[in-house]
View 1 (cartoon, one colour):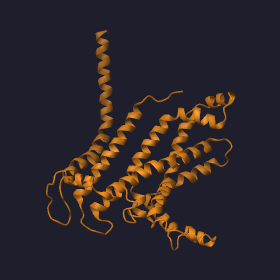
View 2 (cartoon, one colour):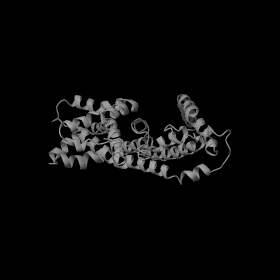
View 3 (cartoon, helix red, strand yellow):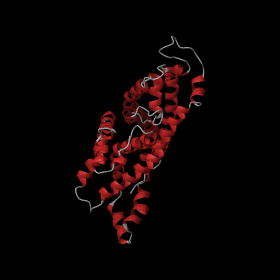
Length: 309
């Protein structure tokens, strides 16, 4: 038995070596692109470095202390939370509705509908933002023009310039671009369920609503958990659409943590152009921690044993 153990141990060692060989390029790339820049940037977060006041000066944790006293940062963080929670609820309601509908045999031209729903996800954030800027323009935009033509002039609103409407509009645009991806993701989960289980539920007298809540939902919980974590990470990272549509305005009404970080560090708004690189770096580390926490939850869920049929 001892020689067999030796051979088994040697084989296991060789298999691990092969795994390391294949993982090495990805690890080196990740270290070069992510880990090293993070380690090099952290000392900058401990300084008052700007592009306007000469060499940086070490200030310890002052940037982080100021950050948690910054009302604009809390507004941005609140907007991320609104996108994650309110936007997430609406997203998954429609994603489930479309996914279940596309799986139904009663729907015709399903391929066309799936393509139309998924198509916005294929566009870049810049392209999406520019399209909606022109569509929602209060003066010459197609939406307000239509409202005026049909006698609903009072509904011709400043969709991106009104602080009360801008955030709602941004969430709508984000959902418009994202629903297709989550619909396809959930459809993959539903397709993984054997048809025999649905046939058995139908024979037992379960209607479509009962089948959805008592069969479909429990059996795709792994897909749902993964989709929720992916959405939370995406909500934290929200930048492109917000930046193109409003650049965080009007005022700070639509800032997210990423747009606020860029505005602080690079003064893209053109106001108070101090280029506070040190402070912006401190914000980036808070974003990094938030994404790290969400990623840890994701990997813990991914390690759980998947449902097998």
